[in-house]
Amino acid sequence: MKPLLLALLLSASLAHAEPLAQVEREGTRVVLYSEPCALHAVKNLPGRVTWKDASGEFEGCWSLNNVGIVSMYFDDLTVMSWPISIFSRVRSI
Image (cartoon, rainbow, N blue to C red):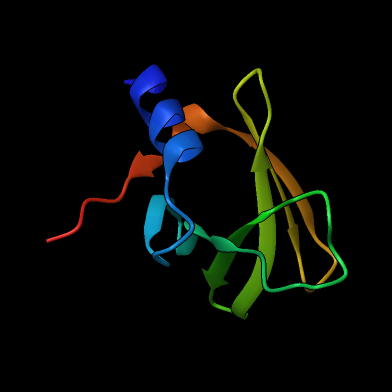
């Protein structure tokens, strides 16, 4: 499953702004998208990510490294690194 998700994330087309993978835990939802990052000041994390919890919704950028770690940076200056294995693939209907 992990190699399949990794392949999906690496091969996703940037032409469509679709959610690729997500994590939902304890009232927090983090979604990785196939579109480019909306934060123009960030150059080394090319993908768009959103974080939504009880305090609000935050835009960010993400990248997947070669050992399966997703690095994320958000507009509230939060930095996170999570293993790709905790994300679930988002399936379109």
